[in-house]
Image 1 (cartoon, protein in one colour):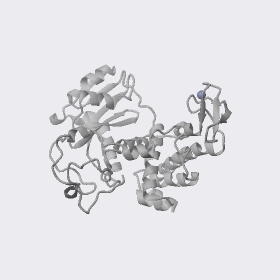
Image 2: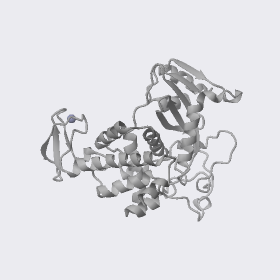
Image 3: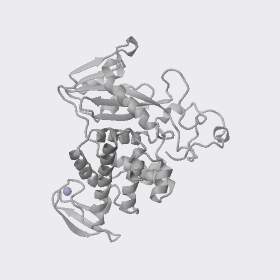
Image 4: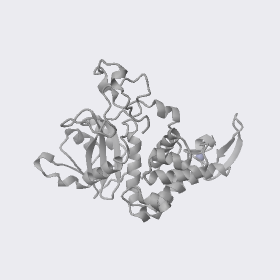
Length: 359
Ligand SMILES: [Zn+2]
C-alpha cells in the first residue's frame, strides 16, 4: 500500500520520495511532540534551550520563561500544529499522502477527516514548507536566472463569498484563458533559480510585472555580486542594479538567443507539471502552492543534513494565518476588475456546474 501510494505521484525516484516524506513527517511530529510531552525544547523566539515554567495563563494553560531573552510564552507561541485537535498520527499520515500527490478528497478519506479540514491541513502544511525553505543564495561567481511565469487567474474558492461578484464566467476547471498574447488575466510569478539549484517563486501581480513588482519578487533573495540573466523586460533593470548584482545580462527572446535562461525554463516546466496535478489553483492560494513547489525542489536535491534542519526549523515555526483569515483572504490584484465588472446577475455567472469551493 505504502509503496503504491508513493509510486503514484511526483516525478521523483522512489527512494527520494520516501526520504522526502519521512523528512516532512519528522518535522510535523517533532513539532507536535514538543508540546505533547509538556515541555518545549527551546524558546520559540530566540531558540535558547534554557526554558523554565512560569505560572499559568488565564485559561489555566502552562506558560514558560526563556532564560535567554527573558520573555514568557504559552503553548500558542509554539507553532504550527501545536494547537491542533487532531492526533499527531493523523498529521503524519496526512503529510505522507499529501506529498505522495493524493487529492484532497483522497487525503480526507485516508485520514478520516472531512474535505474542508483536508484542505485546511494542506494550507497549513504549505506554511510548514515555507518555514523550512532555505534562503536563496547569491554572491560572487554565482549565476542567477530570473524569468516570469504567467498563470491564468482563477477564482476558485470565491464563489461562496457573497460580497465578491465574479467578473466573468467560470472556465471549466483547470482550463486556461483562451486569449492570445500576454493578458492582464494572468497572474505573474517572478521566478529565480541559481547554479546551486536554489529557487524562489513569488506571485507579484497580473500581466507583465512593473518595477515595484519585480522588486517584491526578488526582495527575499540576496543577489549581491551575482551574475543575473533575465529577458529584456525593462522592469528588471533598476531593481537588479539596486540589489547590487555584478552583471545583468538581458537576452532578447524574439531574437532567438534564449539559451541564457535554460535553468529557469526547466524550472517552469517542472512547475507546470507540479500544478497540473491540481484541478485549478485559486490565485488566492497560489503563493502557498509556490512554497510547496519550492520545497519540493529543495528536497529533490537535499541530503541528510537538510532533513535535520527541516526538523529543527519546523519545530519552532509559528503559523500566522488562522482558519478565519484563510477563509477571508481576498482575491489578489482585484483592482484590475474595479469598474470592469459586467452588468449581469450572479445567476448568469454561476450555472449549476459550480467551480470547486476548495483549492
Ligand atoms: Zn528566548
